[in-house]
Image 1: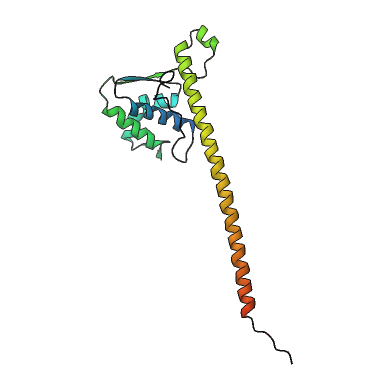
Image 2 (image 1 turned 90 degrees about the vertical axis):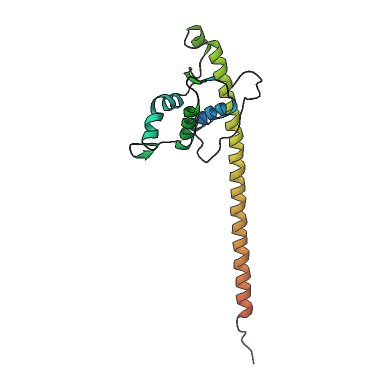
Length: 177
């Protein structure tokens, strides 16, 4: 979320088979970095994104994007983020943690600013809209798969019937006297 009515506000399905919150958070940061060339601050409620980018990314790169001998989750997106961050001038990107799912009481108690609450709520709204559109796509895919399975069964049955008829027509007919 950039600001109210901003053309860079995006809500789109997540590419790939893996549809996780962490993957979506990383994809959102990559999307933002791909849209803006000026220095920017990315505010996120994702500890996963922040810790990966600020604490672990350098170690993962040095270890071939593995942790304890296994590939790190979302390594493809992590590598893209790492490459973008390395290519940026020093101080070009600031990553800031904000409280997620903040309430008005959190604002009143100073746990989060009204600005960050509004931005995070709007970003969550974009994510929910994307997830809903993705669910529709999943439902349509499932319906299409069911139709394909049914069509395959019908085709197999037609082939079996045709084979049985062909076999019956080739069978010798006994002549009666």
